[in-house]
Amino acid sequence: MSWTTVCDLRMDSYQANQVLDATDFHNNAYLLGSVVPHPEYVTYQGPDAQLEVPVQDDSLARFAGLRVQALIRPEPIVHRYNIAEGWMSFAFFIESDGRLVGTIYDGQQWIGPDSGANTVPPQAWSRVSFEYDGVSLAKLTLNGAVVGGRFDMPPAIRQPQQVITLGHWPRGDGRYTLRGDLGHVRIERRDYEDFWRDAMHIAFCRRRLTPVQADAKREIEYLLSTLDPLERERLRECAVRQSERMRAFLHQLRTVDPRGAVRLRQLGERLRAAWCCSFNAPAARQALLEYIMSIAGEPGSEARARYEALAEEFLTISTMCAWTGAPYERIRELSLILFPELQSFELDFRQLVEAL
Image 1: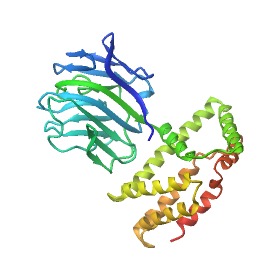
Image 2: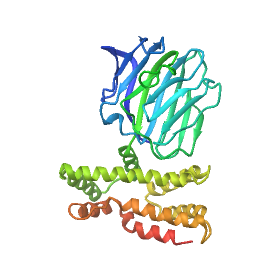
Image 3: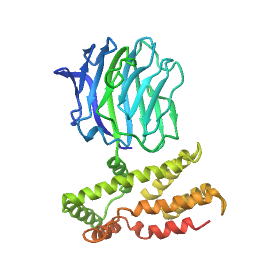
Image 4: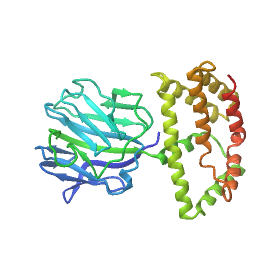
């Protein structure tokens, strides 16, 4: 699964009261208050101590999914210790009873997994992480082991407002300030481009393009490069909307019940195997049919109505950025040279939908 690292603070490079970010985004963190830098970590020595990363451009404002990793050595835990918080976006912290907690804000509520009490050891270095996939799954890890998770996360996250703060509540209030040491912090995001990159990786996996297909791929890239900036922006905006609707669609499938995510992952594995092995169409059809039968319900039931609505939504999502006219008709022709299996995709899918 693709992630884009947008802030990588190794605590080994300081300049002008800043910790330097190792990524090309230059999201440096300002050392504020009574925080003391050392080689490879900083120490929080008072309630005003904090590291503050300004949200200066869209590198920190394009989160669909989120992963925060940090190296921490807390003193005895006497109150909530913030690890990282994006103002009105996400919060990753140690609660006063020693549990590890990660939450995202979806515009209405803060929601996320926790590890249970007495998980984070005081006065010892631990590597902790909070990961939210942008669809429905979230997990917490401690030294590589999963210590908490949820399958029913909302398919949306608000973007950080103004700052991301480490070891402190954003801005003035010091009630949640970390006591102890903070080492390497890495913040990663998933946005529509990462989802698209994953889709392309799957689409081309283990396939050797014929000379004709290679020519088609090059021509598609050329045609896209000839679009004017306004047209490219229109395509980008549609891709963003499509990504948002696909995440909401997957959220509905995953959260039917606690096994929804497991069933969908198993289906995905079978479909990838069918696609990547010269597109074994019978295997793919059988996998889809078995999945449909597991979720469709009886004719006339509430489950069947929900299933039919989901099927229509999937077809809508798959065609919503299918522009007409030049050069899109030519790009569509070339896409069918690259992936001839898509020639009858909509018909095949409708036949599956109506097979029950």
